[in-house]
Image (tube, rainbow, N blue to C red; front, side, top):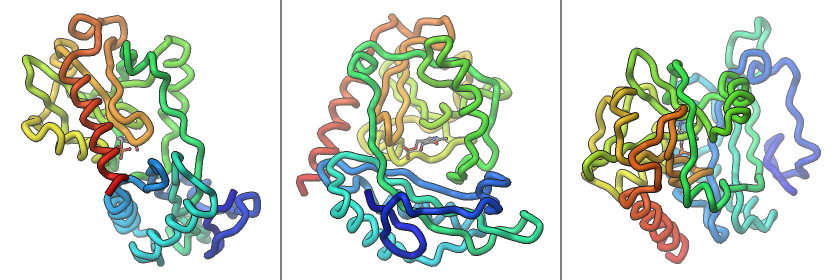
Length: 272
Ligand code: PLP
């Protein structure tokens, strides 16, 4: 496979990063991740905007314009024959004397195989473990995911798909996805201490009456339906939190409808 590194498209095996890069030493770097559907990079503009915004906010110098990034991505899709796959953009913090100043980082763009959760998970829903935690600088897509990687051993052991973060009684998001709840037909989602997901944005378009508001952990447990959203999961129903069944324990009608609407939206997007 080919990737973008060293300012050009090269064989992926030749991509290298300096061991003193603060992306590695301090976890100071940014990334973004999108996917292709039938060779179309879905919602590309949104991902590029978020990547550029993350670079700006972290004072990392991204020397490529939005249209240059888009051109590289289209080129990689062609060269790698990437029909349905993932694309990761990564901008490192770079090498600095005191390992503390972001400067001259490297841009990498590479393609990945994408594995969605199994069909049975969409049919029956999955479990999340609650975790008292709040992400700092939550709305910047930094490379620092040390905490959830470390937690994942526990959630795998307990048969959970992921975690749900809450702090001071309030819910924020899952480790790599946003959360939505349905109660008495009304859809809600929190807005604080989250990464503003592109999938979340699409769901808000599909369900424009969604209330964007603070949600307490207690309230979340009393929901009729819950689902999480992300690029790599689309809309995934949650039917258990810790040992508590959500609603009647089955995937609910609002979640099912949104899952179907999402597929339709995606198909429309790549037939245009
Ligand atoms: N929240 C966090 C912390 C994430 O890492 C992600 C995944 O990228 C999301 C939410 C979902 O965002 P998106 O729908 O853009 O993939």
